[in-house]
Length: 364
Image 1 (cartoon, one colour):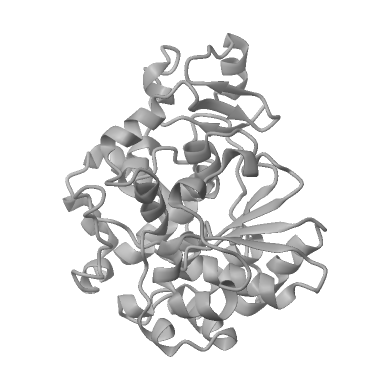
Image 2 (cartoon, rainbow, N blue to C red; image 1 turned 60 degrees about the horizontal axis):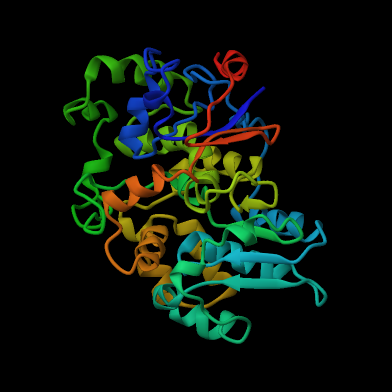
């Protein structure tokens, strides 16, 4: 029996788990993802369900080929599709791919907000405006929509992970900025072992990192390489499902998909690590921006678009103010928050007791 999701407090609140040595929790703190899943399979405490890291072999597809084949997969499901469009790079790639591969009978609804318009106004005018109207931030993450399996839902998730996820400072919520956009690019080109000067528990982090970096599909040299690999290896599953389990608080994931969660995109990421940027943050995700430009000519977006915290903007808009730690804690401590979700569909909410026999099956 495998675990699909566990709450961020799972190992703290349950007496059966408090004394378990769990070294990858520190990796979760570094990545700011409280539910790390080791896709190499070495450090998981629970028997997790995850997509294994693929072996590339002789595989070699272009980014565009990956995009179009992914979009065609969705249309073959013969159901209406709703795409979550933030105006950011990843969701814009997904939107263009779906538009370019749909036929006249396919149904595509675009779910977006005023922030989406502000992030990519030209695409809104040219491709989105006449199809759907914007909605309020508080309506974006609609539990009923996610639980309607007659509609396919598509997000731009896992896009950050394939491109070498940009990582945030540790200064707070609304005020946080993407490192590199404001502090230059030299920082992430330093030797990866510089991370041991960041103030983490070096003995514990070393236990995981030195073994884990040896498993990477190419040599980890810089901090950029390291953060790509940590997100690719440990953060992938959390990001893939966070909108469902964490924000919508629904255990029903079966009809919601991250556009970039495929073997093809993962293999492309491994094969093309050297072209994910060209030495500046303006060129971060350049292959994706070039793909967008091929189908929608916005030179300013292609040259100057930077990574933005699109999901955070939606969450802040939903509460009409700063998305504070207090609001996060209130959500996590809600009786409706999910404590444990199994791959077979069983689930328990925060205040429900998980049977002892379940622990016996899910602990590795």
